[in-house]
Amino acid sequence: MKGPDFLDQCVGKLRSSVGGFVPGSHATLRGCDLHEEFRDAVWMDVFVYGITGRRLTAAQLRLLDTIWAYTSYPDSRLWNNRVAALAGTTRSTGVLAMAGALAASEAAIFGGGVYTAAATFIQRALQAITSGATIEQVVRQELDSRRGIAGYGRPLTSKDERLAPLRDKVRRLGFEDGAHHKLALEIDRYLDEGRWRLRINYVGYTAALVSDLGFSPRDYYLYGFSAFMGGMAPCYLDAVEKTEGALFPIPCEHVYYFGQPPRAWPSGSPNDKLQE
Amino acid sequence: MTNQIRSKIWQEDPQPDNHFATRIARCHGFDVYGDMLGKATWAEMIYLLFRGEPPTPRAAKLLDTLALALANPGPRDASVHAAMCGGTSGTPAAAILMASLAVGAGQYAGGREILLAVRAWAECGCHLQAWQGHLAGPWAAPTASAWPAPEHPPGFDPHGVSTTLIVEQALACLSTLSPGPALPWLAAQRRELESLTGLPLSLAGVAAAAFVDLEFSAEQAEILYLILRLPGAAAHALEQMDFGHKKFPFYEIEFETKPVSAIEEQPR
Image (tube, rainbow over all chains, first blue to last red; front, side, top):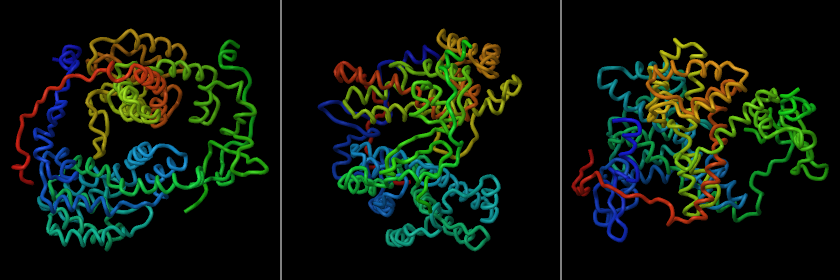
């Protein structure tokens, strides 16, 4: 069945595979009674269950929580955080600030735009290595088919200060023997020692960690959505509590113009010109 | 790192007493407030911003007409539906537009569909054989990205039966205004293309051809399509804000998942 006959079946009704609420009675999440099954749960538990349909252990949830915590920078220079802060200086609302900043976290050079590619790479790489490929072959194939390797290299600086504390946490939580984790670090060593001088970045490292938890690339992408959120509210607050319009004011001469010189607009409206 | 913003689009001369205030603003060299106001139209300004030169009268008329055709997708459209969700529940104006943009960004009648369709024009041009190969799929490069894989050929309605009257009317009108080549070719080859896909042309398909004839890049077409569909979303959202949530559908729910105990689930 297709076309309007198919759509007719969908009119006026939500057929939900993930749950919903019965007003005044209860709410379900992927078949569970939310208030029963998650009575003592932390929010990360609910969030990840909503994405993966699986309950994780306390240590796994702690790891996921830490990944977010360690990248919660209240630095309004960062492009996504800057959106939150600019919304503060223009006296917009806090939710618009955060929502705009979160949307701006789906970038091509960091965050959401890289999650899927990074997880896809490390999962494909492990499959290839398991099937007998070498790290050199995996790296060369990736570099030949793409311009870089998702999860390696960083836009502002090559050294990632988040990695040492996260690696320490990974050790303490007992996740360092994960196959994706070990492979990601071997690739990091290979790339660093070779001519590429690429180092693993936070996305590459965390993509490997969550792959060891059984996350698909899309699971990781959806989980990673809020990774920067912890830093955004302070950026908004810092700006909204200071003088309006005072964050990153730009004087005219700070726009370097290199376009057309001054010129006159052709006279007449388009309708007049069409009739000419 | 620099404190300067680089731009070929916009130049501002400061007021003599305040370099944070604008005395003259030029867009690609044209004095916007001192020369363009009263002479240029909104469509001409939009074209100038994106393309860097004033449009020909014909291109300006084409863009203006396209903007009218796209201005209101109507309350059944998902992007307008999203805007109305914000309107009926009383969200800020920006949230209404952000909701509409998020939904209207997709590959089903959304901005991404336009991007893919304009890329297809760049690849296939006005060559039926090339379109034949393209329309067989997969319609987008198979890269690992956040975008789901396209499920229908961009520019065609996956749930359609026949070409709608409004699509025929839009294609007929825009084709006569177009300097070509895409819209006239599309009008001539529509039936052939539809028989290749088994699907009718959609308004997105007409819009994509119009952007090609306006010489917009795929990225420019995508973002302008998003902008041009916002007026209807905004108007419908404000209308629902007036009516209130009790007069807006909430729908029935049918649970497809049987209750299970999540506690018993073990990590993989």
